Length: 202
Image (cartoon, rainbow, N blue to C red):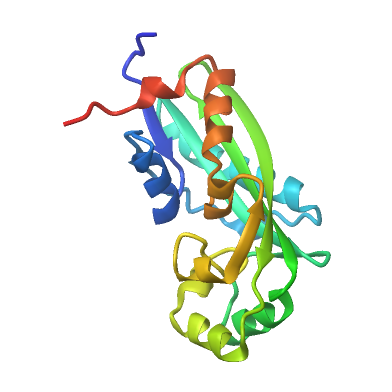
């Protein structure tokens, strides 16, 4: 279909999410929401990430009259607790001592707002993460890189943390912060096709 120059806007400063989109051929405009995540406190991880994703997209959407605005948020649920980014290196080390050899659930909320048609779709996807039995030294060395402090769940599967993930059960890009197959479905629900947003090859 012929689109009326519809923009694709990412309401996030996440470099990993932007890379997923650009690697998939989508020309994306980045507009961080700067939404205060502490405003939303929910005990259910799926409800939490969907509420946060929706709030982030809604914070950015009014700035665009002709765009699809995507908001996302991720947390790790482990042994009945919800974890975002660790606050300190000691916090990250303590988490890894608990997580190693165990299984966590990575939840990512997705909210896509069509500002042209004033429609929105919100979904959550969960992926099981099987953590390796990392040694104390490996955990300390990994945390020392600073990578775990920037990531929900204290690991980045698209970085150094990949060596400490044995396997996944579910969508792998969801663990990076954006389920690309789910995004395709959300775009379809709004009446478009994901290939409509492919940038023209140079």
